[in-house]
Length: 156
Image 1 (cartoon, rainbow, N blue to C red):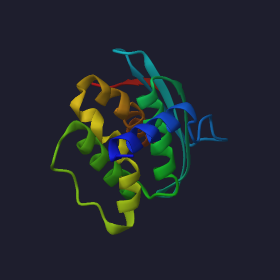
Image 2: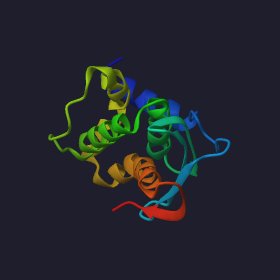
Image 3: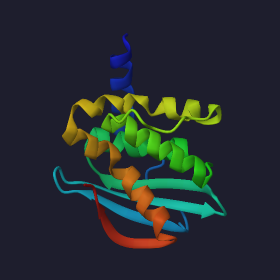
Image 4: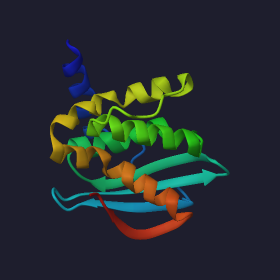
């Protein structure tokens, strides 16, 4: 099996069997995202204590890439500090949009970043980039809000 097939299998698995799907109890933050181009919708729920995400989940309806990205995101961000989340968000966004100027990934986050690499191939399909980044933009909106948010977030 080549790397591309492995990545495709990971995306299909997370798309069909998403991890951390459903609303967590007593979220401290949440935000909705909507991609009007394809109809994908996601709500990201966070429980933030101090400067750390202690729990994260999502609900929504979308394509395999959108769902897989949300699932992988929740797996790698649980337990991370907000600084670590920012590094992973920026590096992931740069990876899928083809920007080569992403931050240096600290050794402590390298394995987490590597888990997101199956989605890197979407950069060759611009309309799919929005699918892969939808939940990440909702996450960012939830964190920037400083608390509960109910307004939809639209990807650019």
